[in-house]
Length: 581
Ligand code: DGT
Ligand code: CA
Ligand code: CA
Ligand code: ZN
Image 1 (spheres, helix red, strand yellow):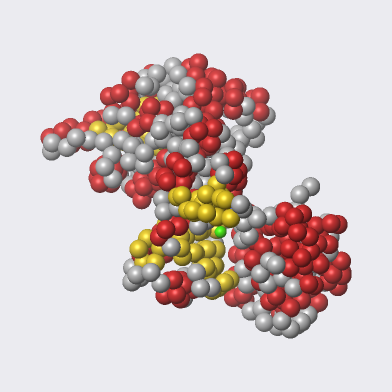
Image 2: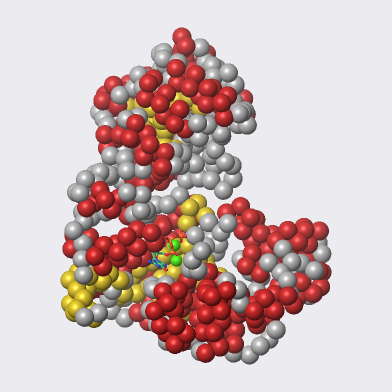
């Protein structure tokens, strides 16, 4: 088993926290500094050690003899005696406890001495029972915050749903763009790759002078904790409960830095290996030609395209940079041309105030037109979903007439926009539907969904969904896996069997654009495309404010390598209708 830089950084960070508990002077900062340096070191410490031994480790900035020996001990034996001793004195789950917002080493020690709190569960119990309230320095307000912090650590492992927290980073980006001397601000890291959840946000800035950017960044209104405030690099926690890393780079290195900080780490490793094979060296400053072990000349660096092309690769879109086969395609100039963010022409899943949505059909029409869409499908819930005021056949027929009226009005006003008749029909336990075929066949688009019996066996659940697909009127399976990110797992289904059946029955599968749904996940999107199954990208809007969620669905589709031809609602309404059953 290989010891990574992240592991070394983590254990040194824990030593720092233990030392801080004991009020040891200076040392905690020294350990923490080394932990930070190693955490962002490009070269693997294990490699450095292999090449140059203890002496080479001492050359890492901030590392003295004593810390170097501990790193060596860890590499050789997988443990550090000093750490074990500290841990014995205060045997708490430090890593998890200090992940809780508002809990530092001193407080963790206090809680251990006074309430014997060792784990997250102990802490939760003390917070909920009121015991925490009574400890010096923990009022009702901080207890409340700690409960929130526990919830966060528990549900997400620290990761948040991208679409939910994105507005916060978009706001910070626009504020930074307003600083004098700032030329460019880019959101990089997993957010740029449109990963469904993010561990933290990363920002890259080009500016004449880094200092004003750093000073502004750590003082922003939304900052609740400053982890680091450096000359070109800083890191903070913001109110949304997520960390933001920022780095200022020079214009000449901007492309190289974009590549490096966009990641993924695995993709970067492949790029660096490719560079080495070509006698080049790639880092966050540029792509360099090497001679006698020295950088001789920078051959690319200011643009990403320059870097990829000089490495003999086609430009790879950020959403594809996951080391899942993209490099080989780029080498052979066979990359898919991904669906563009403005390509969607219609939204195929919308709930109005006829069922559990907040807005009227007309309000959706206005909002969709403002967003540049050409059509929408009204898909209110159906009668089994009584909590959502689902429509029965009578109300559905009534709604169809209303939609005819809306279309007639649009036509009269000379507006090129179409409202289609649809439904989000419930798939019952046995795979039949809760609306009669007689009525379904009069609709333009029928989506079918599982909203009950989430816990059926894999066999039964798969059979149930396939039975729905076999209904000749069912065009789309909405949110086909049913997961809710950080809240509820997918229902147990045989996805390959579902994809086969979709192909056979010509049923479309939905990429649900709601930020915490995003089923199908990227890997499944790739499978569908490979199998020739068509997909739709729908918002599942329950209010007009949800229509802009399309972007998250498109991001997910791009992560799954989808092209325009794979997505039925990237086509004009007439062609889209022809792509249905
Ligand atoms: P996250 O934050 O867990 O959602 O995922 P990322 O991909 O945003 O990861 P993060 O924030 O740790 O780092 C941002 C990017 O910076 C990452 O995608 C690649 C680059 N990077 C960071 N640390 C390293 C490293 O140790 N080695 C390499 N090759 N790249 C790194
Ligand atoms: Ca990140
Ligand atoms: Ca980061
Ligand atoms: Zn639904």
